[in-house]
Image (cartoon, rainbow, N blue to C red; front, side, top):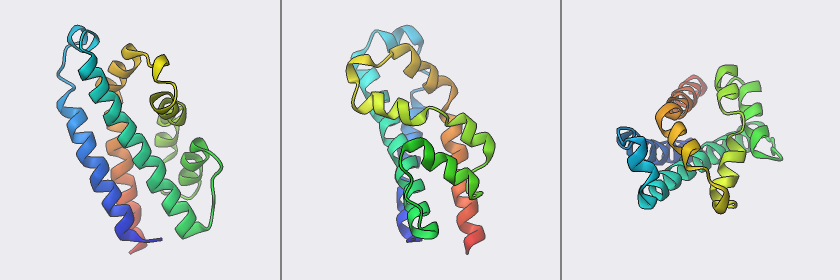
Length: 140
């Protein structure tokens, strides 16, 4: 496992997350009425979801020689290995499906769901960053 690769991806994720946080103050009606805002937030979520799975996969393959078969198994294995908490594992349940909708089922994206995640779920990604950084420090 290359620690610098993980740190680089965490920084990229943090930048995207900070951008999303700056959009939390957008009113619901403004968000739902502005396709460009929706696309911007959707792209931000795509970036941070991809980062979670990329970081998790890099750690699991590089450190534990595991090759998870899907997005949920990446999250589950991170929890089993103590890299993230069981609480965060629960919070990230369905994250792979959300990512897939953003990437593949773009005609099915529910703007209300995206707005709700923007308002209420960004802390999960902060928690992921903190927990991975904490694990990296323990690994030395």
